[in-house]
Image 1 (cartoon, rainbow, N blue to C red):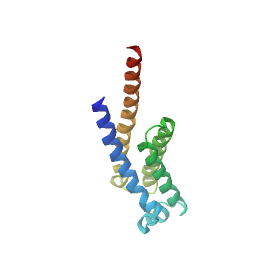
Image 2 (spheres, one colour):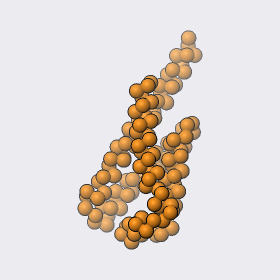
Image 3 (cartoon, rainbow, N blue to C red):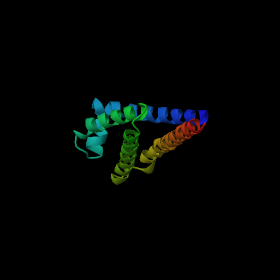
Image 4 (cartoon, one colour):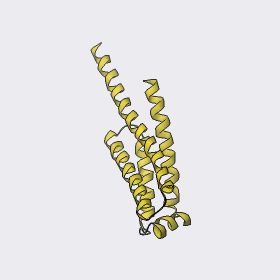
Length: 133
């Protein structure tokens, strides 16, 4: 259980940090973020703070203990966000190295998600064995 907890919290912490650092420029509408999302990718300007706030709420959901269904939705939202970001870069003709780096946070998120479920299963298994004794 200790190994599962360590892997879960390290991967979740790294992923949460990545998403948190990515959400701040969106929320404050930093000029470089506006340039990238609005002018380069062609999304409307109101989309940027919406996406930033959604990321902040998702980070809170995956870090806050409990609420397993909310965590599932947060992980799904992050997956949609990152896959959409990759596709957006591809669709506007960016070179692969500029959008393939998103595979790294996707991999970290996948580790976090898998170990979240391993952690839940381990807690349930420990609870069942305690009840049997």
